[in-house]
Length: 397
Image 1 (cartoon, rainbow, N blue to C red):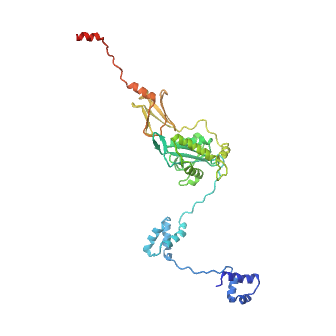
Image 2 (cartoon, rainbow, N blue to C red):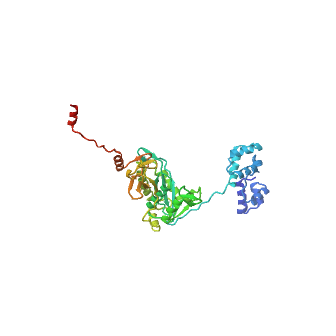
Image 3 (cartoon, rainbow, N blue to C red):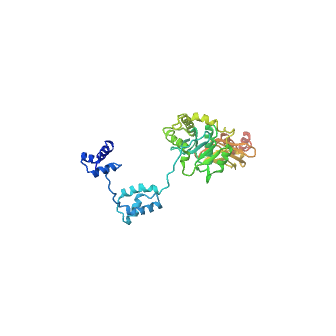
């Protein structure tokens, strides 16, 4: 067999120089049949050997059957299953074959397209859990979550710290984010977060009422589909690596203040994908978004109770004092994201107003309530006759 250089030289002499095969054979000393094969072969010569049989050939059908039943079956288990059938090969031969044929038995990978959002079209939401607990005063730390929002067009973001994933706190977080962004998008996009999502792609009653008050639409992503809200996922990932490391917080208010300042800084940076600042695009986006309503949706917790003889209201493991003069009367308790407010139902009297404590197992007592309770419990001084001392002297004498 001629080498590649000889093959190229023969073809050069014949096709370029116009020499006959006989003349080429005389000059090169090669047989005329060799010259003929080189001239009529369109591919350079290569050493080829017929592939030898593999130890795995007799077991390939069984491997296909196993992969058909379970496409994720590991190679080690497959070797164990075909060993009793007579397979004596090693790990490498099985793993190499599995890399080749396993994709034939798994669902085809999902393909993605780039999405372009119109101004004011959507706002994506997610819940991020900071790695460290948040100080809440009185020497206590508490696990917190951040409701993160990101507008699709401008990529402007906002965040709100909450301490539970209950629906009132999640709705309060959504409300704060929207008010930070300054306008209302057409659609709020969520994954299937408990409390926000009801079932079967439908919203919970509370979330539906919230959207109805704001006159916005909602959309839920399919299960296990974070790519559908990739804008907020990327913003959340950036927060995890850029906001929290190296920071200290005095309390939950300081955490929120630092978070707001960080989002203002992030919104003012040049976005890598957009090649523009989100804060600049936000101005254009607000122009086509719906304005915020004059009154924010009510997402407070409310319930009715009677003031107990021990005039305290318990919420989130903390006890808040109530007016002892209202014992036995029905009152309405209202818990906002920052305040505890209790009002008598019949007269509208204020039964109690306290700053909400996120520290656990505390008793918060209003000074006026403490004084009224003490005054009501002091026994009245009995009336005792005060006699002149002369009477006692007369009795002794």
